[in-house]
Image (cartoon, rainbow, N blue to C red):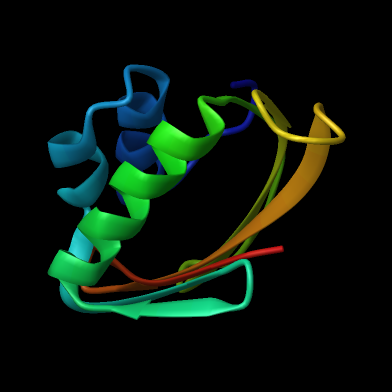
Length: 108
């Protein structure tokens, strides 16, 4: 990654490389909300389930291609390559940060 990511987001993507669900979940706040594919997951248990299901279903790799934002919001553009129609695709991860944790993530 050529652009510096805020620490919780950097930790999330580093763990994603190894598909380490515990490490991917660690930077999220207890009451975090994730929005992906028209679904909304609230809280760590729901986010863990979403991570496990998407990793199993799509078996994909992520390459960060760009970063923009401020201290409270960060948008990360990525190229996803995996076992899904249209692979590879470019997606946007919009993170909301609060007190050093990921409070929200919307993937589009």
